[in-house]
Length: 264
Image (cartoon, rainbow, N blue to C red; front, side):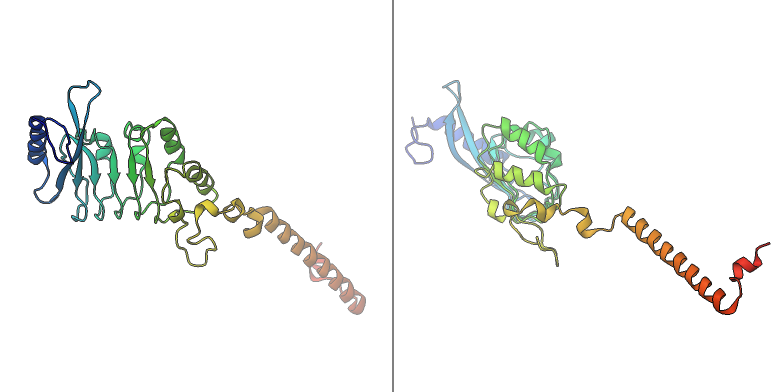
């Protein structure tokens, strides 16, 4: 017996029913997660016999402060948009996330993705969406290294974050987003953070010139050597001025300068 619906066309009914039953039992529907679960489709495994389900777990806008502790074992896509999540550690150390390929983390409180650096997850993910978080910088070298080896990556979203624009981070980050512009679908929204009085405020990072973020120090900072030279020049002027005054005073009054008069 096979399925005739559009979702699981020509797939055997009993395995599909078993998968749906397992998904329903494992779905984290109880508070505080209150998630919903949907099996999008199934595909044959490489063995040609068993089936692989592709399942979406939707935990968006649930007021979560952490990623769910438990997920169905067949979870491939996780939606956790619009929460207050700040840590990505479960992607690294929670076995319930081992099959998650697509992560939609938009509108959360994520400040760093360093927890993912050097992990297997970066080598296999398909979607990593981090729009509208609190990211100011990312480890571009680690991401570049991972994406060179990841053949699954399809979408990376980084827009609407308060990115730092300085000479230390921006050049490598700019090179990264331009190199992977086919993956960074929202590259036009990757902009410098909003800073009052900063000429780069809200500027597209892909369009920044290096001189805009890497000005020569002499353009905006008095160097210590320059300051020392100015002090020495001022002292020389004062000494010469004092000598001229003492000479003029001696010629006019015949009196030696006070310091000379006190010398033995």
